[in-house]
Image 1 (cartoon, each protein chain N blue to C red):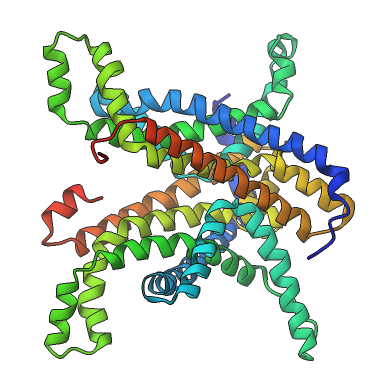
Image 2 (image 1 turned 180 degrees about the horizontal axis):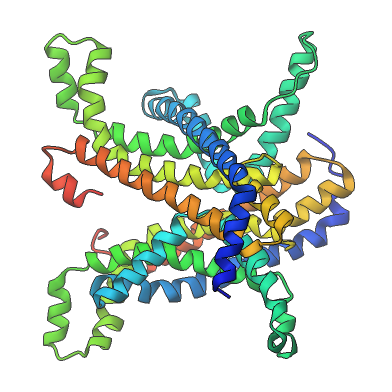
Length: 232
Length: 243
């Protein structure tokens, strides 16, 4: 079953890699979902022009490969920034020189678009009667959103969001193409330094299986905490 | 940032690299199309195996779909690309054939097809399970053979349910072809990278590539919508609320 002598030497780097992968994943999911809520909401209830912008954003991001978006941000925008001397002297410069912020922004935008699309359907699927009932109880528009509309919407699409989280996890290796050493990137280092092709890849695949399993269990737990009409 | 020079740059980029972008797009579409068809083939067989197969076959298929759907495409592509081409070359050498080089196109199609097959299997399984048993039995009662039942009853019953999933898979594979840039296959994403590096018009090159991918997506969506309208004709409820 292959040669694994290299594993102890690189164990710590893999641990660091897992850390980077999880960090990117959680940043993307958290901020992406925060953005997805208004993006979904304005498509259901917002003014026409705002709904059109949100829909256009979702179509554009969902219609192009994440790899191209990542390269566009990192190589494209990143190549422009040095031309602005104000930026070079500002406190932002050390951040703009790193690769991680570009990856984080690219993944956040991607999650926002995919989950924004999901949330649009979720908001639309909440029965109108429930919202009207809440309004007639004297709740303000924001209270209705916080207490009724958003929780009911999320409850409807939790399994879909779980699937989306796994898809996001699986796209994190793309970050290694812009010099970020996530788990996959560490696997690449091992491949280059030991000339072993398959073992590091299989190991990375195995780690991914574990992380995916944990994510699935986590979302299952979340789903069980949310009361559902479908279960007794 | 976006002014006259921006458009002048794009013009310069396209007059120099336009044909390369075009070839890259063709390569991407070829792989996407081949991989999609292979994925469908695997999907239909996999779904039939998962529903009607014995316990061992079911178990093997379950492992296949679970593994493929849990491991990143990039890992699978590297594994299958390197391992697959090497195994095949060794196998052919052992059989006494000359050293053969496996074309990147064939390898790309097989790799993406195997990945798509796992997702396809699930889509087709859902659609097959939704075929009303009574209609199949009615077909048999009329004396139709199994192939005729498949063509006349099962496919028309499946398509309205399978099409949204199938259209999604097509949109995914057109974008997944970009991953082959990482293993050095010259499709649209890699061509873009080369053009960007050579001309130093990074932003412009990636924007052009994005626009091309977006166009492919929009045209595909339009075509799939037309197809969906066709297969759901006469089923008002599905056509309006199903997708």
